[in-house]
Image (cartoon, rainbow, N blue to C red):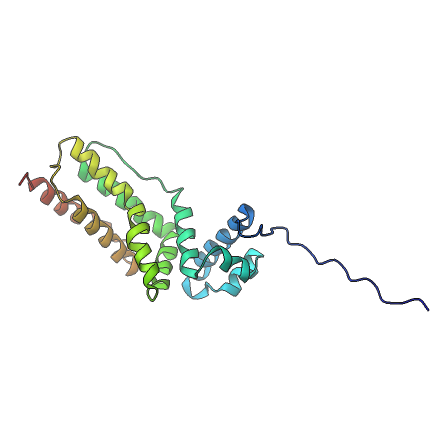
Length: 209
C-alpha cells in the first residue's frame, strides 16, 4: 500500500536573510529603517523588540546577535541618521559659526526622528555602566567633532587663544543642547544666541597664562 503522506514543504526563506555572524547589509538597513520609523511614529514607549521584528521582517535572535542591547541598536539608528546631517559652517566668525551649527542641530532634532532617537538612547542605557562608559568615551567625542572643528578654526584665525579651555566650552554647549532636548525645549532658539554670546565673550577674554 502506497503511503499517502506528502513530503514536507521546504521552509520559506526570508527575502532578507542573515549571513551568520557577519551582518547582512540589506537586513541591517531594514532593521535600522524600521527602528527609526517606530520611534518617529510611536516614540520610546512604542519601541519594542516585537514591534521591530514585525516591522523589519527580521527575528529577535538576528537583532540580538548584531546588537547586544536595545541601547546599542538605538545608538546605531542615531549615528546612521547623523551621517546625513551636515552643518559645519565656516563664516570666519566663531560666534556665528556656533549659532548656525547649534540652531541647525536643534532644527534637525525637531524635524526628524533623530531627537526622539537620542532621547531614547540616553534613557535606555541609564542602568548599563558599560554603555554609559561607551557614551562618555566614544559616542560623545564623535558627536562633538563639529564643535571642536569650529573652535579649532577660531584658534587658527587668532580669534581665541590656543590656551582657551576648549574642552570646557564643548562640554558646556553639548550639555546645553542635550538639556533642551531632554526637556523638550528645542524651540527656544534665543537661548542659543545668548548662551553662545556669553561663552565666546568668556573665551575671548582668556589669554595665555
